[in-house]
Amino acid sequence: MKVVPSRSSEWVRPVTSQRPASTIIEIDRVSQVFQTSARKDHVALSDISLTIEEGAFVSILGPSGCGKSTLLYIVGGFVSPTSGAATMKGQAITGPGPDRGPVFQEFALFPWKTVLGNVMYGPRQQGVRAIEAEAQSRTLIEMVGLKGYENFYPKELSGGMKQRVALARTLAYHPEVLLMDEPFGALDAHTRTRLQNDLLNIWERDRKTVLFVTHSVDEAVFLSDKVVMMSKSPGRIRQVIDIDLPRPRRRNELLLDPRYQKYVVDIERMFDEVDETGSPS
Amino acid sequence: MISPAAFARRAAPVFACIGLLAVWQIAALILKNDSFPTAIEAIRTIPDILGDKEALINILASLRRMAIGFGVALLVSIPLGLLMGRSRAVAAFFNPLLMIIYPVPKAALMPIIMLWLGVGDVTKILVIFLGVSLPVIYHSFEGAKAVEEKMLWSGAAMGLSSLQRLVRIVLPAALPEILTGCRTGLVLALITMITSEMIARQSGAGNILFNALDMGQYDTVYAMIIVIGAMGIGLDAIFERVRAMLVRWSEPQFDMPLSFS
Image (cartoon, rainbow over all chains, first blue to last red):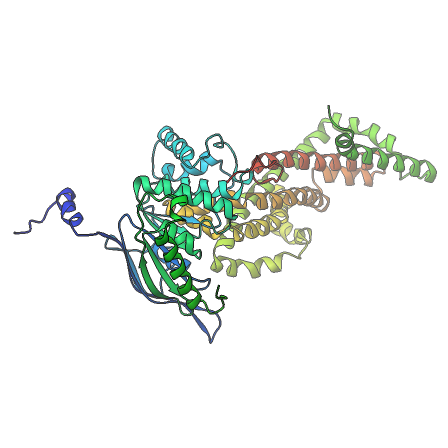
């Protein structure tokens, strides 16, 4: 067949989607070196290559100091790699953009804005009319379980509530990829579990691509399609594990599932191997 | 109804004022010095000053200079401080300059400024401007430096340009710190205003004070001190109201609602 150069993108799109699993993000031989002192360099990431498929929930798991957050920041465009490159849909990532929405452990909400103001911020920036942005934001706030808190300031909210707002704020501008940087790391165990469940419920509705950084093995297994296990000094990919567990996942069912338990045990063992300072359990 | 404790807290400044005036009154009665009027005599003179059209024009002229000097200082210092806080290059350029200017009493620069610009409004406004600028620059700088990087990243991901981030994220995030600097700046504006009028004697509240001193009108001298002091307290109180309103979101006064995850 002769390929006709086309002006219409619709003509091209079916062809790309016919590929077995379309790659959305490609990380190609990325290294990151931080100069800690005049003589000594700290190699945070060494020669990382990874492809992430559209609609996949991928966790990057590793001990602290393995550069997993740095890798996420490179995909976000917040940090430029020392060498190598990351691409999104074939386009080189040169800076942050609304197609990649971050959710940080520190929440990073705008404290001078109410919950509604925070969630509306992205759509308004994107030029959505105030009435529409507000309606969409109210729906999102309800979805993350914060109905009734629209006019509260971040200062008035608990950590778990703040992270719910942060998630809604990012979802509000419809990024194609969610970049979650240890989002539940600052929360207590109970809150953490509830947010994991709710995140999974939300995610299973529209299956956005998620890149999720964590150092919790069961969190990674519970949420992900794929777990990328990293080792530290220098940060390298140790192994990529496909998590073949049915969806929708329910926590109470999964915890009893031997396959889930095996994933957790196997990955925990691997985690102990890569983390020299970690005590074997 | 307010509780006795809350009442005591609110009434405390009033009692302090009354106490101070009482001590003054008693001291003046004991010392019986011509150049030291009693508190009541000084207070009785205040309506005379405020009733005098000339004096009133002078005081308003002072306030006008102060407002211009303060306003221009904010317009220049806040953006400069924010830029310094977010850009190492800008900070590296201005920091040494500011470190030199910082310890110099701005009033000490007046003779030079007077030589160049005369004894009129421009000289006095410039001195007020210099007095206000440094604390405002410093606090804006510190406030901008402390802005959480992740907050700026969140804005960048939403598509805010670096200038938009400076205006729409760094400025509001640093506002509590900036306003702390402005409050110090406001008091310094009053101080430099009076000082400038004492050096370049031509008009203004400081001039009234020193003219009265020259003429031995000690009641007026003390009355003017009360008037200037009241202006300071009043301006500070108004500013504090405005500040509290603007940064309500950052005050830890809220009670946590029933917390849930």
